[in-house]
Image (cartoon, rainbow, N blue to C red; front, side, top):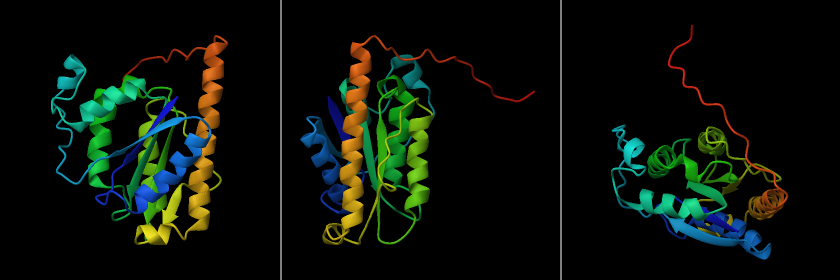
Length: 205
């Protein structure tokens, strides 16, 4: 089993990295492989609604989004981490997730996921809600912890002093490992994914 952890902070080893690393530590202790992916700080194109991915199965902009979706097809779970900017996740993460989930939804369906946020003070719950919506629209079980998945601090050293936040990250990793093990056990016993009904409504009668 493998979990991909996405760090969308412009600071590669900052607060968000510190939080994700603690979740990864718990996953690894439970025998789950992890890969931490940093989105970098270069410009990232947002979705332009061109529809190319519906025909090609890949985003028209061939960058880290497509390479991530390729990895996602082989992964079993996901953690998306972001600092809080004006009470929302980073614009880079939103552009990344818009394109990844729209062009490669099948790579994520029925796989557990979690959102992790870091902030100096506030805006975490609003950001938490934004990221979780990607999961719930894609039939993904949302993994919980023993508190909301937030850490606090202006720099990594501050987060390292946030004992409750780090405990929440650690418990999140443990809970995700448990869910992955339950899903694997279900597969071994013939429990298959439900068949979702498909309908698209553009108006209400």
